[in-house]
Amino acid sequence: MNYQILTSVSVCALAKYMLDSILFALKFIYMEKTMNRYEQGIERFKEIKGNGADKSIERLKSLHPDLEKLIMEFAFNDIYGRPELDMRSREIATVASLAAMGHTAQLKVHIQSALNVGVTKVEIVEIILQMALYAGFPAAINAMQAAREVFDEIEANKINTNGGVKPERKKLASL
Image (cartoon, rainbow, N blue to C red):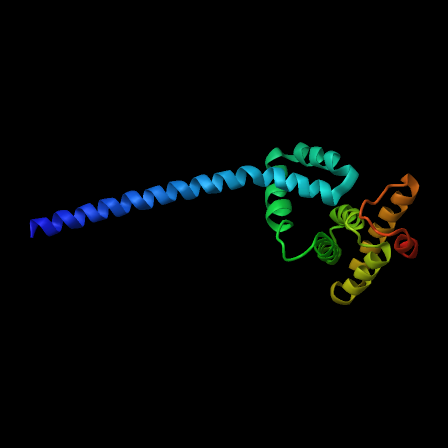
């Protein structure tokens, strides 16, 4: 009887040791993964944002460094890094949702980002028109104004949208 109790205690101690070891290993793997989340998010952000990425990162840091870190790790690594949608599709969804919610400051940023990843001006206009059905005309008017401001800034400053869109397609997209 004492032998069975001793064996049960030994098995429990061994199981606890094994679980602690597994937990330690998982924490190490998680830490190693999270150490790279920020850098991966920064790289993806630069790919989407294009030439203005460094300035935008500094602006976010000036608001609060923890906010910038969370945005790079969660938004641009964990979400934008998912393989199920390409960057172009993600920016289309982002433009539509920001337009529908009326967040025009962020909408302008993501219209530029959408252009950087290959969405055309014509497509952005169509996204806003489609969104008008569900979010209403006031949201569509504000979104169209934001798009116009981004398009005008591109023309005025000859900003290069680095989305790799073929020149003939860009000609069709000019408004």
